Length: 336
Ligand code: SAH
Ligand code: SF4
Image (tube, rainbow, N blue to C red):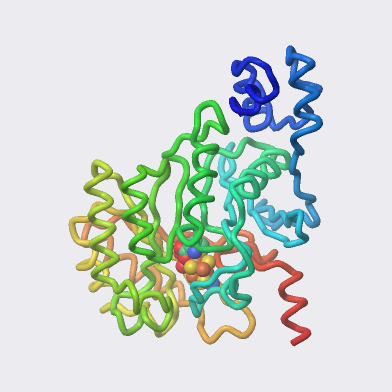
C-alpha cells in the first residue's frame, strides 16, 4: 500500500488509513475515507479494483452457527462458517477449493483439489464474516476446506494481514492453523515464526491405521510428525499445541488407542481435541457412541492430559467439521 501511495505521487502516510479502512472498518468505499488527496483517489480508482466476493447462500443452524457460501471471481464457491460463542464469534476459514490430501473420513476430500485460494480470498472471507455477524469475529481457525500448509505462501500472506495490528489486528493467539501433518510445512512455520497457533490432526495412534485414514502418513509417519510438533513447541517457547483426534467407531476409538495416545503425547503439554466423526452419506465410517467418547476421554484425563470433546456445531446445515463442501460440487458429483 505504501508502494501504491508512492506510485500515485502521494505521501506513504496515507497507506495506513487505507489499510485501516479496508481491514479494520470493513469499508471498501475509497470515497468514504476522509482526507485522502485527490491525486491518490484518482490513482486508486484507475489502478486498483476492490474484490468483494458475492455471498450466494447464507444458512443458519439451530445452534446459531452460520454458513456463508462465497463466490470468487472465477465462479468457484468457497464456504466459511461462523460459530457463535458467548459474546463473540469464531470463524472457520477455507484455504483451498477442495483438498489434495484425500483423508478417507473427510467430505472435502471427495472432490479433490480444484485450486489454492489467494490471501485476498481468505481476507475476503473474514470481511464477509464480520459483515454478517451480530458480534465481532474474535477467533480465526484455518480449519475449513483445504490443507493450509499445501498453500503456504498465500496462507502466510493472509496471516500477515490478519495478525498485523495495523491490518485486521487479530491477536496471533486467537488464530489457529490446522494441518493434517505436513512435516516440512511445520518446520517452515518455525522458521518464519508464523503468527498463529498450531493444531495437528493426528487421528490415529498407529501408522497402520493412520496410513489408511490420512494417506500422507506414508510420507510423514507418526514419529516424524510428532518430532516436528515437539520441535515446534520447543522453538516457540513451550507454545501449547492442539492435537486433533477424529474418533471413528471401531477404527481408532478403543481404550488401547487412548492409552497409546497418552504415550505418544507424553510430556508434550498439548491439548487434545476429540472430534466424534460427523457422518455423511456414502462414508465407510461410523460415529462413536457417547460412552466410547467419554471412556476414551477419561483415560486421557487420568494421564493428566487436557482433553476436550469438540461438540459438533451446525450439523443441520452441514457446517460441521469435514462437511464443508459446496452444493455446486455435490451437484457435479451426482451427475457423474
Ligand atoms: N486440512 C486441515 C484443516 C481442515 S480439516 C486438517 O486436516 O487438519 C479440520 C479438522 O476437521 C481436522 O482435524 C480433520 O481431521 C477434521 N475432520 C475432517 N472430516 C471430519 C469428519 N467427517 N468428522 C469430524 N472431523 C472431521
Ligand atoms: Fe484435506 Fe483436512 Fe479434509 Fe484431510 S481432513 S482431506 S487434510 S481438509
